Amino acid sequence: MQYYIQAYDFTDENALSRRIEARPAHLQCMRELKQAGHFIMGGAILSDAGAMIGSVVIMDFPEEFMLMKWLETEPYLLEKVWDRVEIKPFRQAEV
Picture 1 (cartoon, rainbow, N blue to C red):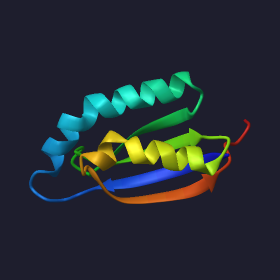
Picture 2 (cartoon, one colour; picture 1 turned 60 degrees about the horizontal axis):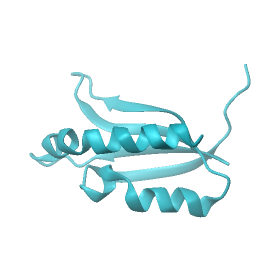
Picture 3 (tube, helix red, strand yellow; picture 1 turned 120 degrees about the vertical axis):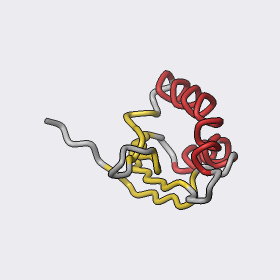
């Protein structure tokens, strides 16, 4: 099952510094998930000024509990980078 995850960062004055500090661990996690076949694509949501304000990730997990297990260890959640997270089932178009 594929999932579309849209997450917006906290907006307090330390939000960007937390993101930058947690980013290496987050990217390593994404690399490992990609190698395991779970990461389809993702990247930062940008403000009009080009600042990172959130993330979009499209993942593939055979069972929902695996998605939930990943979220329990996701650095951007553990380090309070992501404030609001929306998860929707997703189907990638074959074009």
